Length: 534
Image (cartoon, rainbow, N blue to C red):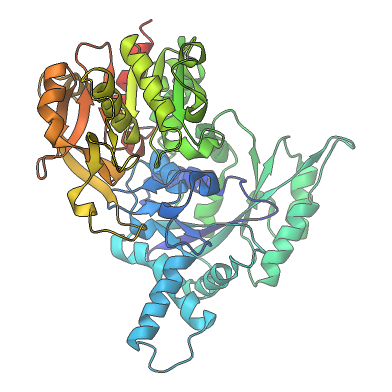
Protein backbone atom coordinates (compact mmCIF):
# COMPACT_ATOMS: atom_id res chain seq x y z
CA UNK A 1 0.00 0.00 0.00
CA UNK A 2 1.26 3.48 -0.90
CA UNK A 3 2.21 5.71 2.04
CA UNK A 4 1.88 8.85 -0.09
CA UNK A 5 -1.62 10.04 -0.94
CA UNK A 6 -2.28 11.57 -4.37
CA UNK A 7 -4.75 14.31 -5.26
CA UNK A 8 -5.46 15.10 -8.93
CA UNK A 9 -6.86 18.54 -9.78
CA UNK A 10 -8.62 18.86 -13.13
CA UNK A 11 -10.56 21.67 -14.76
CA UNK A 12 -13.65 21.86 -16.94
CA UNK A 13 -15.90 24.31 -18.82
CA UNK A 14 -13.15 26.87 -19.50
CA UNK A 15 -9.46 27.48 -18.93
CA UNK A 16 -8.00 29.99 -16.44
CA UNK A 17 -10.45 29.09 -13.66
CA UNK A 18 -7.64 28.98 -11.11
CA UNK A 19 -6.66 25.32 -10.75
CA UNK A 20 -3.20 26.45 -9.62
CA UNK A 21 -4.60 28.67 -6.86
CA UNK A 22 -7.02 25.95 -5.67
CA UNK A 23 -4.16 23.41 -5.67
CA UNK A 24 -1.89 25.81 -3.76
CA UNK A 25 -4.68 26.71 -1.30
CA UNK A 26 -5.45 23.05 -0.55
CA UNK A 27 -1.75 22.38 -0.12
CA UNK A 28 -1.49 25.34 2.28
CA UNK A 29 -4.36 24.04 4.41
CA UNK A 30 -2.98 20.48 4.57
CA UNK A 31 0.49 21.84 5.37
CA UNK A 32 -1.00 24.03 8.12
CA UNK A 33 -2.50 20.85 9.62
CA UNK A 34 0.96 19.30 9.86
CA UNK A 35 1.13 17.26 6.64
CA UNK A 36 4.12 17.38 4.28
CA UNK A 37 2.81 18.40 0.86
CA UNK A 38 4.11 19.25 -2.60
CA UNK A 39 2.39 20.23 -5.84
CA UNK A 40 3.26 19.39 -9.43
CA UNK A 41 1.94 20.63 -12.76
CA UNK A 42 1.36 18.45 -15.81
CA UNK A 43 1.32 20.64 -18.93
CA UNK A 44 -0.19 19.27 -22.15
CA UNK A 45 1.90 21.34 -24.58
CA UNK A 46 4.63 19.68 -26.65
CA UNK A 47 7.40 22.16 -25.75
CA UNK A 48 9.96 20.48 -23.48
CA UNK A 49 9.55 23.44 -21.11
CA UNK A 50 8.26 27.04 -21.37
CA UNK A 51 11.81 28.40 -21.67
CA UNK A 52 11.51 29.11 -25.39
CA UNK A 53 7.93 30.42 -25.21
CA UNK A 54 7.13 34.10 -25.72
CA UNK A 55 5.55 35.48 -22.49
CA UNK A 56 2.50 36.48 -24.55
CA UNK A 57 1.95 32.75 -25.16
CA UNK A 58 2.17 31.41 -21.64
CA UNK A 59 2.96 34.18 -19.18
CA UNK A 60 6.27 34.35 -17.36
CA UNK A 61 8.72 31.47 -17.28
CA UNK A 62 9.39 30.57 -13.64
CA UNK A 63 12.82 29.24 -12.63
CA UNK A 64 13.40 26.78 -9.77
CA UNK A 65 16.43 26.46 -7.49
CA UNK A 66 17.73 23.51 -9.51
CA UNK A 67 17.54 25.44 -12.78
CA UNK A 68 14.30 24.15 -14.31
CA UNK A 69 12.37 26.54 -16.55
CA UNK A 70 8.77 25.88 -15.56
CA UNK A 71 5.16 27.00 -15.71
CA UNK A 72 4.24 30.14 -13.73
CA UNK A 73 1.91 28.07 -11.51
CA UNK A 74 5.01 26.73 -9.75
CA UNK A 75 5.54 30.30 -8.56
CA UNK A 76 2.10 30.21 -6.94
CA UNK A 77 2.94 26.87 -5.33
CA UNK A 78 6.14 28.24 -3.78
CA UNK A 79 4.54 31.51 -2.68
CA UNK A 80 1.77 29.62 -0.87
CA UNK A 81 3.60 26.70 0.73
CA UNK A 82 7.00 28.40 1.13
CA UNK A 83 8.92 25.37 -0.14
CA UNK A 84 11.15 25.19 -3.24
CA UNK A 85 9.97 23.18 -6.22
CA UNK A 86 12.21 21.27 -8.63
CA UNK A 87 12.38 19.95 -12.18
CA UNK A 88 10.17 17.05 -11.04
CA UNK A 89 7.33 19.46 -10.15
CA UNK A 90 6.65 20.41 -13.78
CA UNK A 91 6.14 17.80 -16.50
CA UNK A 92 5.24 18.55 -20.12
CA UNK A 93 4.04 16.36 -22.97
CA UNK A 94 7.28 17.26 -24.73
CA UNK A 95 9.36 15.83 -21.89
CA UNK A 96 7.22 12.69 -21.69
CA UNK A 97 7.49 11.97 -25.42
CA UNK A 98 11.19 12.84 -25.50
CA UNK A 99 11.89 10.32 -22.72
CA UNK A 100 9.84 7.58 -24.38
CA UNK A 101 11.42 8.18 -27.80
CA UNK A 102 14.92 8.14 -26.27
CA UNK A 103 14.11 4.81 -24.62
CA UNK A 104 12.85 3.44 -27.94
CA UNK A 105 16.05 4.53 -29.69
CA UNK A 106 18.12 2.74 -27.04
CA UNK A 107 16.08 -0.42 -27.54
CA UNK A 108 14.63 -0.39 -24.03
CA UNK A 109 11.26 -1.66 -25.25
CA UNK A 110 12.79 -4.83 -26.73
CA UNK A 111 11.20 -4.49 -30.16
CA UNK A 112 7.68 -3.75 -28.88
CA UNK A 113 5.40 -1.34 -30.74
CA UNK A 114 5.58 1.92 -28.79
CA UNK A 115 2.09 3.28 -28.09
CA UNK A 116 0.28 5.94 -26.09
CA UNK A 117 -1.03 3.12 -23.88
CA UNK A 118 0.92 1.73 -22.10
CA UNK A 119 4.20 3.53 -22.85
CA UNK A 120 3.21 7.21 -22.69
CA UNK A 121 0.76 6.68 -19.83
CA UNK A 122 3.34 4.62 -17.90
CA UNK A 123 5.89 7.44 -18.24
CA UNK A 124 3.31 9.96 -16.99
CA UNK A 125 2.54 7.72 -13.99
CA UNK A 126 6.26 7.31 -13.26
CA UNK A 127 6.67 11.10 -13.14
CA UNK A 128 3.66 11.56 -10.88
CA UNK A 129 4.86 8.95 -8.38
CA UNK A 130 8.48 10.13 -8.52
CA UNK A 131 7.93 12.97 -6.02
CA UNK A 132 6.20 10.73 -3.49
CA UNK A 133 8.90 8.07 -3.73
CA UNK A 134 11.89 10.41 -3.75
CA UNK A 135 10.86 12.78 -0.93
CA UNK A 136 8.30 10.68 0.95
CA UNK A 137 5.62 13.38 1.08
CA UNK A 138 2.37 12.68 2.89
CA UNK A 139 0.40 14.20 0.00
CA UNK A 140 1.28 14.98 -3.62
CA UNK A 141 -1.15 17.30 -5.41
CA UNK A 142 -1.02 17.02 -9.20
CA UNK A 143 -2.59 19.77 -11.28
CA UNK A 144 -3.43 18.75 -14.85
CA UNK A 145 -3.18 21.69 -17.23
CA UNK A 146 -5.78 22.54 -19.85
CA UNK A 147 -9.46 21.62 -19.79
CA UNK A 148 -11.02 18.14 -19.66
CA UNK A 149 -12.04 17.19 -23.18
CA UNK A 150 -8.95 18.70 -24.82
CA UNK A 151 -7.21 16.22 -27.13
CA UNK A 152 -3.86 17.18 -25.59
CA UNK A 153 -5.01 16.24 -22.08
CA UNK A 154 -6.31 12.75 -22.90
CA UNK A 155 -3.10 10.80 -22.13
CA UNK A 156 -2.87 12.52 -18.73
CA UNK A 157 -6.50 11.80 -17.90
CA UNK A 158 -6.04 8.15 -18.84
CA UNK A 159 -2.81 7.93 -16.81
CA UNK A 160 -4.43 9.28 -13.64
CA UNK A 161 -7.48 7.06 -14.18
CA UNK A 162 -5.13 4.08 -14.13
CA UNK A 163 -3.30 5.46 -11.10
CA UNK A 164 -6.53 5.81 -9.14
CA UNK A 165 -7.21 2.11 -9.78
CA UNK A 166 -3.63 1.11 -8.91
CA UNK A 167 -3.41 3.20 -5.73
CA UNK A 168 -6.85 2.38 -4.38
CA UNK A 169 -9.79 4.67 -3.45
CA UNK A 170 -8.36 5.78 -0.09
CA UNK A 171 -4.95 6.71 -1.50
CA UNK A 172 -6.09 9.04 -4.28
CA UNK A 173 -8.91 11.37 -5.20
CA UNK A 174 -10.04 13.77 -7.92
CA UNK A 175 -10.84 17.43 -7.35
CA UNK A 176 -12.63 18.86 -10.39
CA UNK A 177 -12.86 22.63 -10.83
CA UNK A 178 -15.71 24.01 -12.95
CA UNK A 179 -17.60 27.24 -13.59
CA UNK A 180 -21.16 28.11 -12.56
CA UNK A 181 -21.96 31.10 -14.80
CA UNK A 182 -24.48 33.77 -13.86
CA UNK A 183 -26.97 34.83 -16.55
CA UNK A 184 -27.90 38.41 -15.77
CA UNK A 185 -30.86 38.38 -18.20
CA UNK A 186 -32.64 35.72 -16.15
CA UNK A 187 -30.87 36.39 -12.86
CA UNK A 188 -29.87 32.72 -12.56
CA UNK A 189 -26.79 30.66 -11.80
CA UNK A 190 -26.51 27.80 -14.29
CA UNK A 191 -25.21 24.34 -13.33
CA UNK A 192 -25.52 22.72 -16.77
CA UNK A 193 -21.87 23.48 -17.81
CA UNK A 194 -20.70 21.72 -14.63
CA UNK A 195 -22.92 18.72 -15.35
CA UNK A 196 -21.55 18.46 -18.90
CA UNK A 197 -17.98 18.77 -17.65
CA UNK A 198 -18.47 15.94 -15.15
CA UNK A 199 -20.09 13.89 -17.92
CA UNK A 200 -16.90 14.27 -19.99
CA UNK A 201 -14.90 13.06 -16.98
CA UNK A 202 -17.21 10.04 -16.62
CA UNK A 203 -16.80 9.23 -20.32
CA UNK A 204 -13.07 9.06 -19.61
CA UNK A 205 -13.65 6.66 -16.72
CA UNK A 206 -13.22 9.15 -13.88
CA UNK A 207 -15.77 10.04 -11.20
CA UNK A 208 -14.75 13.30 -9.47
CA UNK A 209 -14.66 13.00 -5.69
CA UNK A 210 -14.85 16.73 -4.94
CA UNK A 211 -16.30 19.53 -7.09
CA UNK A 212 -15.02 23.09 -6.67
CA UNK A 213 -17.40 25.55 -8.34
CA UNK A 214 -16.09 28.96 -9.40
CA UNK A 215 -18.82 31.56 -9.13
CA UNK A 216 -19.43 35.30 -8.94
CA UNK A 217 -22.46 34.87 -6.68
CA UNK A 218 -22.99 32.67 -3.59
CA UNK A 219 -24.39 29.19 -4.22
CA UNK A 220 -27.52 28.38 -2.27
CA UNK A 221 -28.38 24.95 -0.85
CA UNK A 222 -30.69 24.19 -3.76
CA UNK A 223 -27.90 24.64 -6.33
CA UNK A 224 -25.43 22.58 -4.29
CA UNK A 225 -28.00 19.82 -3.93
CA UNK A 226 -28.69 19.84 -7.66
CA UNK A 227 -24.98 19.60 -8.52
CA UNK A 228 -24.46 16.82 -5.97
CA UNK A 229 -27.42 14.84 -7.34
CA UNK A 230 -26.53 15.09 -11.02
CA UNK A 231 -22.77 14.71 -10.56
CA UNK A 232 -22.79 11.72 -8.17
CA UNK A 233 -21.13 13.39 -5.17
CA UNK A 234 -22.36 14.12 -1.65
CA UNK A 235 -23.32 17.66 -0.57
CA UNK A 236 -20.15 18.16 1.50
CA UNK A 237 -18.13 17.55 -1.65
CA UNK A 238 -19.65 20.52 -3.51
CA UNK A 239 -17.32 23.41 -2.66
CA UNK A 240 -17.99 27.05 -3.49
CA UNK A 241 -15.08 29.18 -4.77
CA UNK A 242 -16.42 32.71 -4.99
CA UNK A 243 -14.46 35.58 -6.53
CA UNK A 244 -12.22 37.44 -4.03
CA UNK A 245 -10.16 40.63 -4.03
CA UNK A 246 -6.85 38.79 -3.65
CA UNK A 247 -5.78 35.21 -4.39
CA UNK A 248 -4.32 34.99 -0.88
CA UNK A 249 -7.84 34.89 0.57
CA UNK A 250 -8.61 31.61 -1.22
CA UNK A 251 -7.06 29.30 1.44
CA UNK A 252 -9.24 30.94 4.10
CA UNK A 253 -12.33 30.56 1.91
CA UNK A 254 -11.48 26.90 1.27
CA UNK A 255 -11.10 26.43 5.02
CA UNK A 256 -14.60 27.91 5.55
CA UNK A 257 -15.89 25.47 2.94
CA UNK A 258 -14.08 22.63 4.77
CA UNK A 259 -12.29 21.50 1.61
CA UNK A 260 -9.31 20.24 3.64
CA UNK A 261 -11.53 18.24 6.01
CA UNK A 262 -13.47 16.67 3.13
CA UNK A 263 -10.23 15.69 1.39
CA UNK A 264 -8.64 14.25 4.53
CA UNK A 265 -11.72 12.17 5.32
CA UNK A 266 -11.85 10.76 1.80
CA UNK A 267 -8.14 9.89 1.97
CA UNK A 268 -8.62 8.26 5.39
CA UNK A 269 -6.15 10.67 7.01
CA UNK A 270 -6.63 12.05 10.55
CA UNK A 271 -8.33 15.45 10.76
CA UNK A 272 -5.97 16.52 13.51
CA UNK A 273 -5.18 20.01 14.80
CA UNK A 274 -6.78 23.17 13.43
CA UNK A 275 -4.73 24.71 10.60
CA UNK A 276 -2.07 27.12 11.88
CA UNK A 277 -2.77 30.15 9.72
CA UNK A 278 -1.98 33.06 12.08
CA UNK A 279 0.84 34.45 9.92
CA UNK A 280 -1.31 34.08 6.80
CA UNK A 281 -4.21 35.96 8.40
CA UNK A 282 -1.84 38.66 9.62
CA UNK A 283 -0.46 39.04 6.08
CA UNK A 284 -3.99 39.46 4.63
CA UNK A 285 -5.02 41.87 7.39
CA UNK A 286 -2.03 44.12 6.69
CA UNK A 287 -2.62 43.80 2.95
CA UNK A 288 -6.27 44.87 3.23
CA UNK A 289 -5.69 47.64 5.78
CA UNK A 290 -2.79 49.71 4.44
CA UNK A 291 -1.69 52.92 6.16
CA UNK A 292 -0.02 54.38 3.05
CA UNK A 293 -0.30 54.18 -0.71
CA UNK A 294 2.43 54.38 -3.36
CA UNK A 295 2.69 54.00 -7.13
CA UNK A 296 5.51 52.06 -8.77
CA UNK A 297 6.12 52.00 -12.51
CA UNK A 298 6.89 48.63 -14.08
CA UNK A 299 8.72 49.22 -17.36
CA UNK A 300 8.64 46.21 -19.70
CA UNK A 301 7.71 45.14 -23.18
CA UNK A 302 5.12 42.47 -22.33
CA UNK A 303 2.96 44.65 -20.09
CA UNK A 304 -0.28 43.93 -22.01
CA UNK A 305 -0.32 40.48 -20.39
CA UNK A 306 -0.19 40.76 -16.59
CA UNK A 307 1.06 37.18 -16.22
CA UNK A 308 4.28 38.13 -18.05
CA UNK A 309 5.60 39.67 -14.81
CA UNK A 310 3.52 37.68 -12.33
CA UNK A 311 6.30 37.03 -9.79
CA UNK A 312 7.36 40.70 -9.71
CA UNK A 313 3.79 41.81 -9.10
CA UNK A 314 3.27 39.25 -6.35
CA UNK A 315 6.61 40.23 -4.75
CA UNK A 316 5.38 43.82 -4.55
CA UNK A 317 2.17 42.61 -2.87
CA UNK A 318 4.27 40.74 -0.28
CA UNK A 319 6.47 43.81 0.28
CA UNK A 320 3.42 46.07 0.51
CA UNK A 321 1.91 43.94 3.26
CA UNK A 322 5.13 44.04 5.32
CA UNK A 323 5.21 47.84 5.05
CA UNK A 324 1.42 48.19 5.51
CA UNK A 325 1.42 50.00 2.21
CA UNK A 326 -0.83 49.60 -0.82
CA UNK A 327 1.38 49.27 -3.89
CA UNK A 328 -0.26 50.46 -7.10
CA UNK A 329 1.56 49.19 -10.17
CA UNK A 330 1.50 51.26 -13.34
CA UNK A 331 2.53 49.17 -16.33
CA UNK A 332 4.61 51.15 -18.83
CA UNK A 333 5.30 49.76 -22.30
CA UNK A 334 8.99 50.32 -22.98
CA UNK A 335 8.42 50.65 -26.74
CA UNK A 336 6.22 53.68 -26.16
CA UNK A 337 8.64 55.79 -24.11
CA UNK A 338 11.65 57.90 -25.03
CA UNK A 339 13.58 60.86 -23.64
CA UNK A 340 10.98 63.29 -25.01
CA UNK A 341 7.94 61.81 -23.24
CA UNK A 342 9.51 60.09 -20.24
CA UNK A 343 8.91 62.95 -17.76
CA UNK A 344 5.21 63.07 -18.64
CA UNK A 345 4.89 59.27 -18.59
CA UNK A 346 6.46 58.95 -15.13
CA UNK A 347 4.46 61.78 -13.57
CA UNK A 348 3.08 60.67 -10.21
CA UNK A 349 5.30 57.58 -10.07
CA UNK A 350 7.48 57.26 -6.97
CA UNK A 351 9.73 54.37 -8.01
CA UNK A 352 10.61 52.36 -11.09
CA UNK A 353 11.30 48.69 -11.76
CA UNK A 354 12.84 47.91 -15.13
CA UNK A 355 11.77 44.38 -15.94
CA UNK A 356 13.66 41.40 -17.41
CA UNK A 357 13.38 40.42 -21.06
CA UNK A 358 15.27 39.39 -24.17
CA UNK A 359 16.05 41.03 -27.50
CA UNK A 360 16.35 44.53 -28.90
CA UNK A 361 12.66 45.52 -28.89
CA UNK A 362 11.86 48.11 -26.24
CA UNK A 363 15.41 48.36 -24.86
CA UNK A 364 15.93 52.04 -25.73
CA UNK A 365 12.75 52.89 -23.81
CA UNK A 366 14.09 51.06 -20.77
CA UNK A 367 17.36 52.97 -21.05
CA UNK A 368 15.46 56.27 -21.26
CA UNK A 369 13.56 55.34 -18.06
CA UNK A 370 16.82 54.50 -16.26
CA UNK A 371 18.38 57.84 -17.28
CA UNK A 372 15.39 59.78 -15.98
CA UNK A 373 15.25 58.08 -12.56
CA UNK A 374 19.04 58.24 -12.14
CA UNK A 375 19.15 61.96 -12.86
CA UNK A 376 16.06 62.73 -10.76
CA UNK A 377 16.98 60.63 -7.72
CA UNK A 378 13.91 58.38 -8.05
CA UNK A 379 14.23 54.88 -6.46
CA UNK A 380 15.17 52.27 -9.08
CA UNK A 381 15.33 48.48 -9.14
CA UNK A 382 16.67 46.81 -12.29
CA UNK A 383 16.19 43.06 -12.71
CA UNK A 384 18.33 41.02 -15.15
CA UNK A 385 18.02 42.99 -18.42
CA UNK A 386 16.92 45.89 -16.19
CA UNK A 387 20.38 45.90 -14.57
CA UNK A 388 22.02 45.60 -17.98
CA UNK A 389 20.06 48.63 -19.24
CA UNK A 390 21.28 50.60 -16.19
CA UNK A 391 24.87 49.67 -17.06
CA UNK A 392 24.43 50.69 -20.71
CA UNK A 393 22.80 54.01 -19.74
CA UNK A 394 25.58 54.83 -17.27
CA UNK A 395 28.26 53.96 -19.82
CA UNK A 396 26.70 56.21 -22.45
CA UNK A 397 25.79 59.22 -20.32
CA UNK A 398 28.35 59.22 -17.51
CA UNK A 399 31.39 57.43 -18.95
CA UNK A 400 30.83 59.08 -22.34
CA UNK A 401 30.92 55.81 -24.30
CA UNK A 402 28.24 56.89 -26.77
CA UNK A 403 27.96 53.56 -28.60
CA UNK A 404 27.98 51.47 -25.39
CA UNK A 405 25.58 48.55 -25.71
CA UNK A 406 25.03 44.87 -25.08
CA UNK A 407 26.41 42.52 -27.71
CA UNK A 408 22.94 40.92 -27.61
CA UNK A 409 21.51 44.13 -29.08
CA UNK A 410 24.44 45.29 -31.23
CA UNK A 411 27.09 43.03 -32.71
CA UNK A 412 29.03 46.06 -34.00
CA UNK A 413 29.36 48.11 -30.81
CA UNK A 414 32.95 48.98 -29.92
CA UNK A 415 31.96 49.13 -26.22
CA UNK A 416 30.13 45.92 -25.28
CA UNK A 417 29.67 46.78 -21.60
CA UNK A 418 27.31 43.79 -21.50
CA UNK A 419 28.69 40.75 -23.29
CA UNK A 420 27.93 37.08 -23.89
CA UNK A 421 29.12 34.86 -21.05
CA UNK A 422 32.22 32.83 -21.89
CA UNK A 423 30.53 29.46 -21.40
CA UNK A 424 27.66 30.55 -23.70
CA UNK A 425 29.86 31.22 -26.72
CA UNK A 426 29.70 27.68 -28.08
CA UNK A 427 25.97 27.23 -27.37
CA UNK A 428 23.70 26.91 -30.41
CA UNK A 429 20.49 25.42 -28.97
CA UNK A 430 18.08 27.77 -27.18
CA UNK A 431 16.13 25.51 -24.81
CA UNK A 432 17.49 24.98 -21.30
CA UNK A 433 20.99 26.29 -22.13
CA UNK A 434 21.06 29.61 -20.26
CA UNK A 435 22.65 30.21 -16.88
CA UNK A 436 19.74 28.81 -14.88
CA UNK A 437 18.95 28.22 -11.22
CA UNK A 438 20.48 29.29 -7.91
CA UNK A 439 24.04 30.59 -7.75
CA UNK A 440 25.98 32.09 -4.80
CA UNK A 441 26.75 35.79 -4.53
CA UNK A 442 29.09 37.59 -2.12
CA UNK A 443 27.95 41.06 -1.06
CA UNK A 444 30.36 43.87 -0.25
CA UNK A 445 30.10 45.09 3.34
CA UNK A 446 29.16 48.75 3.68
CA UNK A 447 27.07 48.71 0.50
CA UNK A 448 23.37 49.57 0.30
CA UNK A 449 22.63 45.98 -0.74
CA UNK A 450 24.44 44.69 2.35
CA UNK A 451 22.05 46.81 4.45
CA UNK A 452 19.12 45.29 2.53
CA UNK A 453 20.13 41.64 2.97
CA UNK A 454 22.07 42.08 6.22
CA UNK A 455 24.33 39.21 5.17
CA UNK A 456 27.48 38.66 3.11
CA UNK A 457 26.59 35.45 1.33
CA UNK A 458 23.34 34.93 -0.56
CA UNK A 459 21.95 32.59 -3.21
CA UNK A 460 19.66 33.85 -5.97
CA UNK A 461 18.11 32.38 -9.11
CA UNK A 462 19.31 33.29 -12.59
CA UNK A 463 18.08 33.16 -16.18
CA UNK A 464 20.41 34.86 -18.64
CA UNK A 465 23.17 34.48 -21.24
CA UNK A 466 24.77 37.94 -21.07
CA UNK A 467 26.73 39.53 -18.24
CA UNK A 468 28.54 42.68 -17.18
CA UNK A 469 31.84 42.94 -19.04
CA UNK A 470 34.56 43.00 -16.36
CA UNK A 471 36.93 44.85 -18.74
CA UNK A 472 34.99 48.01 -17.80
CA UNK A 473 34.93 47.38 -14.05
CA UNK A 474 37.44 50.07 -12.99
CA UNK A 475 35.84 52.80 -15.10
CA UNK A 476 32.39 52.16 -13.62
CA UNK A 477 33.69 52.04 -10.07
CA UNK A 478 35.64 55.30 -10.41
CA UNK A 479 32.62 57.05 -11.95
CA UNK A 480 30.27 56.05 -9.09
CA UNK A 481 28.45 52.88 -10.17
CA UNK A 482 29.78 50.19 -7.86
CA UNK A 483 29.89 46.42 -8.41
CA UNK A 484 28.86 45.27 -4.92
CA UNK A 485 27.87 41.66 -5.56
CA UNK A 486 30.08 39.01 -7.20
CA UNK A 487 29.85 35.32 -7.86
CA UNK A 488 32.66 33.87 -5.70
CA UNK A 489 33.53 31.15 -8.24
CA UNK A 490 33.56 33.06 -11.53
CA UNK A 491 33.92 36.74 -10.56
CA UNK A 492 30.74 37.60 -12.48
CA UNK A 493 29.17 40.87 -11.37
CA UNK A 494 25.74 40.13 -9.90
CA UNK A 495 24.80 43.48 -8.31
CA UNK A 496 25.46 47.11 -9.28
CA UNK A 497 24.48 50.14 -7.22
CA UNK A 498 25.00 53.91 -7.13
CA UNK A 499 25.73 54.80 -3.49
CA UNK A 500 25.22 58.55 -4.06
CA UNK A 501 21.68 57.91 -5.33
CA UNK A 502 18.71 57.62 -2.99
CA UNK A 503 18.04 53.95 -3.94
CA UNK A 504 19.54 52.66 -7.19
CA UNK A 505 20.19 48.91 -7.40
CA UNK A 506 20.49 46.60 -10.40
CA UNK A 507 20.68 42.82 -10.00
CA UNK A 508 21.59 40.26 -12.63
CA UNK A 509 19.46 37.62 -10.89
CA UNK A 510 15.68 37.34 -10.38
CA UNK A 511 14.79 38.12 -6.73
CA UNK A 512 11.08 37.81 -7.56
CA UNK A 513 11.41 34.02 -7.84
CA UNK A 514 12.21 33.71 -4.12
CA UNK A 515 9.59 36.00 -2.58
CA UNK A 516 6.83 34.21 -0.65
CA UNK A 517 4.03 35.24 1.71
CA UNK A 518 5.97 33.98 4.73
CA UNK A 519 9.38 35.19 3.48
CA UNK A 520 8.98 38.36 1.38
CA UNK A 521 12.14 39.18 -0.55
CA UNK A 522 14.29 41.82 1.23
CA UNK A 523 15.03 43.74 -1.98
CA UNK A 524 11.35 44.37 -2.66
CA UNK A 525 10.60 45.02 1.03
CA UNK A 526 13.38 47.63 1.27
CA UNK A 527 12.48 49.18 -2.10
CA UNK A 528 8.85 49.68 -1.03
CA UNK A 529 9.95 50.90 2.41
CA UNK A 530 12.17 53.57 0.86
CA UNK A 531 9.44 54.80 -1.49
CA UNK A 532 6.79 54.85 1.26
CA UNK A 533 8.89 57.34 3.26
CA UNK A 534 7.68 60.11 0.95
